[in-house]
Amino acid sequence: MSSKSNKNWLGQVFLMELRNLIAYRADFWVNFFGQTFFSLVVAYFLWASVFEYSGQTTINGFTIQKMIFYYLMVPLIFRIQQGHGIGFLSKEIYDGNLNKFLLYPINVYSYKLMTYLATSSFYLLQLFLILLIYNLFFYDPQIYSFSLYNLIRFSFVIVLVSISFFYLYSITELLAFWFDNIWSLGVILRFTSSFLGGALIPLTFFPTSAQTILQYTPFPYLIDFPMQTLQGTLSTESFLSNALIATGWLLVFRFISTLIWKQGQYKYTGIGI
Amino acid sequence: MIRYARLYLHFLRFAFSKAMEFRADFFFRVVMDIIIYIVHFLFFSIIYLHTPILGGWSIDEMKIFIATFIFIDAFHMTFFANNTWWFPIYINRGDLDYYLTKPVSSFFFMAFKEFAANSLLNLILAIGLLSYMISNHPVALDLSKILVFILLIINGSFLFFMTYFIFLIPVFWTHSPRGFGDVFYSAEKIFQRPDGIFQGFAKKVFLYFLPFSMMASYPTRYLVSPTDNSLLLEILAASCFIYFVVYLLWKKGLRNYSSASS
Image 1 (cartoon, rainbow over the protein chains, first blue to last red):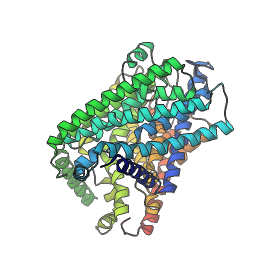
Image 2 (tube, rainbow over the protein chains, first blue to last red; image 1 turned 30 degrees about the horizontal axis):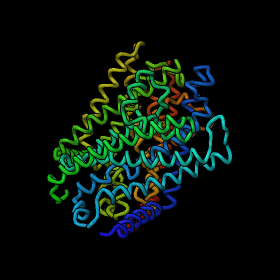
Image 3 (spheres, one colour; image 1 turned 180 degrees about the horizontal axis):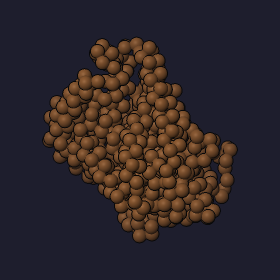
Image 4 (cartoon, rainbow over the protein chains, first blue to last red; image 1 turned 90 degrees about the vertical axis):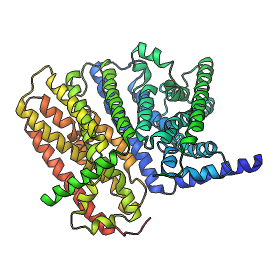
């Protein structure tokens, strides 16, 4: 296959996936605004209560306004990384649908990554929409510093960590070659990464020792790093070092995932259940 | 009634034989739930590093609350979750026909057919955790209140399922793959927070309209606070309201059901 036609099919897959995503438009928008609304309401009341009982207006550098912005953006960032979510590979293995991908003259990983990124891109557009609304009506430089430069850096980081998450997810997904039903493993990964990455509570609220340990894991680079990039709180040096570490984790996940894929193919019967 | 009990026993038998096919999944589910339980406790532990009280509760009362919502979640996962997963698929594929033609309540079939035997161990774990938290509470809790509390949290589990169902039932009209289930997943966090943190209009909505606070928070409040029977009346009223709403929506949805695959 020539490189031109190779690019073509990747683009087609990307567009086809986007069309699938907006097939149920009403549902899509209700789910989107509903999720954002409830996440925000829960976070607001929880932290308003914490601020009230603690008698402080700032905790670990967060005011209640900063906290609201954090909980407005973090679920969206997490959703972008999630792409297709659990089942994007394991279901194909479980159902025996992987056969078609093995027969097509295309790379399964490229195909799946493209559909994954199509979903991520769509959620990224949602984030931009929410950011636009926020900037139009509630923008306050005390809460976060908006600049086009930060937005470009954020877009780069979010693509990087989405690809990283894809490979991380694929590690659990590919275990379906051995265990058939691995839904629970996907949930474990999603839940731990959301907690240890700072999606449930900002990482600065964790005890200092826990924060130090977490720096040696991939989780802060998946959620906290993109969030800090969006907020514009990272210096150029910190940004570059974090981006480098995040890339390193991506390569590690890719290596493990490829290794499992190679081993798993020998276990695959193609029958499905 | 006996007919339904016998039918449910058949559901259980099928569920256990199905679960035995995926032994690794059985193990993974236990690990998954233990990790989720730990994360819930860590979450509130971190919050309590920054405040002595949350929603009017100390950390000891909060531990009972956490164990309560973990129990309700485990109950839901065991008895209802698979059914809610299949429900939109039945509607969209036209598979509901199969249940409508049976000489039993179609809602009973839809709500109870899929028992998750692989989650049963998690439910047992959750019961153990809740018992531990209650027995280790610094203030001795009244036995009669504990008995009422058990009834309230079972009711809370049903309320959880019914509320989730309200988010799924639009599938009758939209024919989408998951209805508004994603909204529910965000909204359900309300049920994992003490009702004391909510104020004003939102508090009323989460008590009476989308009764997330009635599921785990009110039963815990009844257990750990001085006896207040008005809480029981409120739970009863909210439960009746939700059950009635689901009944109406189910009837209306069935009238709209075309049986055609979508």
